[in-house]
Image (cartoon, rainbow, N blue to C red; front, side):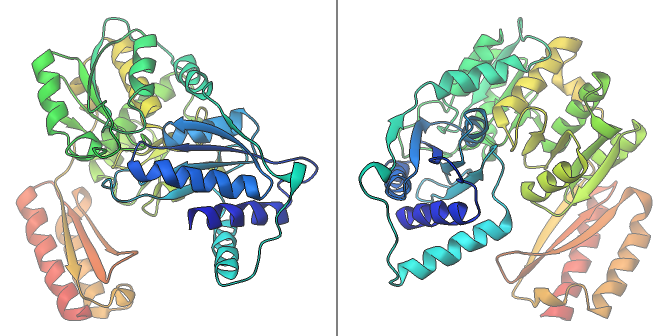
Length: 431
């Protein structure tokens, strides 16, 4: 599949005119998981067999592959990673020229072409000098680290930072970038062996980071996921600072520097209401999108916004990255601490996270969420009860027959009560 999809991608992009007038070049990278070792070989073989020259950058974060695709003028980028998933999983992500995610129609076309040829139609392959050549591109590591440190508005001298690398793709890059920026660095989860990626560590398991920050008396801690496109943090007391709080801190910092275009930040409908209330109080606009960094990025590109992200820690700073970049986000967060002399706990207090309760209601007809009169009446009653300091969101799952009921309120017990009642109505109305 990896080989076939790579050949299909080369053909589809050639048909679209991406390679017109020159021999195409691809940047290929991966995270450390064991399956990436042979899937990378399959991807490289597929691209080269289709006439694409390949620069193999080895183990680097997803945002590094995106950055290098743009910086090297490559025609496409390929990243092998399953992000925050467990080791047995893996995936293939394609980037277009410039390091941007491929358009939906191109992704659909690649899948269709792959299926056509998988069931029998032979590929038209080049021979002789027309085949692609493969070269290891070790310089990519330094180029990416230099890019990260070069965009920092303030050095990190005097800061002690704990980095949890999730035994993933940033295990070398992130500590190197923080050290070059002047921080004293302590690392955990930075010994990938191909099997331990995301295993009880990283942005989905913060307990080790909390303990390490307190133990070492660090100023803050930064956690990445397996491919390092996410960043979550903890303050000096070991308290979590989530993606919404990171967005709030960076939004104020960027506005102060005149870098927050239109004084607006892009977030998803799942962002905590406390974030929106804080931004409103600070005079910063918030544009909401559907859940998914793809939708955040589309909104940012369409309107030229400079900052967007998700509660999960996907943060996109469009002046310096074409995708979420966990190392860049962590560096900018630490730079704000160093620049202001204020602790992360103090900076993050700009917003108060309202209690948020999420209930998954399985085995229901999710297609009727927006047409059920009974459900609409229940939601309206809940919204009246919660008033201006609460919020209700019903969201059909994209992959399962379930509906997610999310309720925010100023009081946790009220949020639980309202969410429970709504979940019961979802079961009775859609079951």
